Amino acid sequence: MSVVSRKFLETIEPSVHKKTPVIPFSIFLSIESDVDFQVNEQAEICIKVNIEVILWRFFIVDRLSDNMVLGMDFLHDYDVTIECNPFNLKMSRNLAN
Image 1 (cartoon, helix red, strand yellow):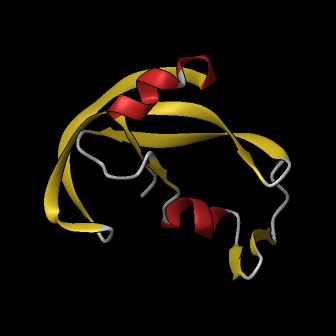
Image 2 (cartoon, helix red, strand yellow):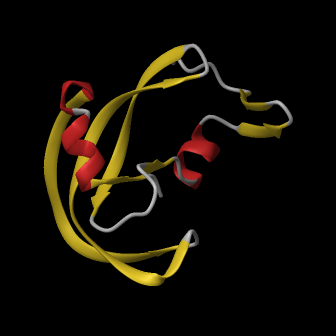
């Protein structure tokens, strides 16, 4: 699940396509397994991945230690391979689709 910090979202407002409410739910993230995040909003945000700019949906959460996290939803949809040295996201699917 891709998530974005509410605090960070406020700093990138021009990149936000739209924010919409969702039926409230709670999630646990592997990066912060001791926190039960409450979600009641989502945002579609223009992000740059490698050299491409795409629109992606993020659930908005409070108290996230990272600015944003590309989740398994993104990794799966774009069939991503993460290369560590040097860091690169290798996509098997074209981002323009």
